[in-house]
Length: 345
Image 1 (spheres, one colour):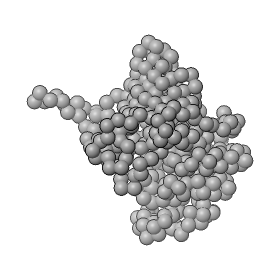
Image 2: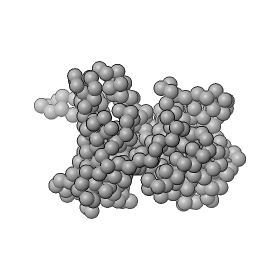
Image 3: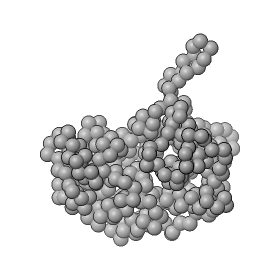
Image 4: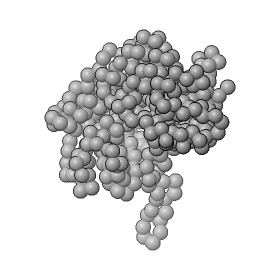
């Protein structure tokens, strides 16, 4: 039985997920869409197979009896109320990051889910499904390099869209490394420091680049270079330093060419190219879980992991908030977290 999915938000990422759910993955059918731009939603619906409904409001889509599960790809500030409405309706909801734009709203979602007594929310931190990141975590977890001591991360964008705001370097970009850090080592981030340097001439009013320093509960140090106007492409790097060795993501280019005394390889254009397989795996895992739950088998994915939860969305938001404060004050800031509910044990 296919999961009948309603998608809120038919912008770039929404349309990409609709394509994924419709043409690439198995076990789903997009049956309803909504967007603040009603005309755009109508155009997207008209191109989809079957009778796809267009709803004038997100609440209308969530309440639709034909919708089994909801995908939220709308503007970030709208996420909280849309996710809360899905939880209140008892419907599973996949929310693109951020779960919400404030730590308080993320906590409201956690509390609503705890009150419901079951996990309904999954947050779109796709790097957890990237084959390279998964292999890196496997090596670390196996103890092959000894106890992890440090992690070096690079997050570079060729440029940013017009709606990108000064705080987005932290709330939209560095937040991926915050989630990767928690997932990679299985522990919370406790303190944050931000360093500014010489500004990129392409940056406008954005502080770029930034160096973000994280420290985890056991003392692991993580540095994250954020460069969002570096022009040459989308470049993601990660190396874990252990007691006995190191492990790092491989080169993103499948082929390196040495010719005419030079070396060339391909750099991805953007996140969709670099993490296409991660997005596919992320959504297929969610769909498989939903289909199994509909049949009462209580299936989880092959790692026994139900994916990034509302708690993960809240924790990333708490680290993001602390990082914003660290950037403004130049101080080392402690991350403030509420007690973790048993639902997310």
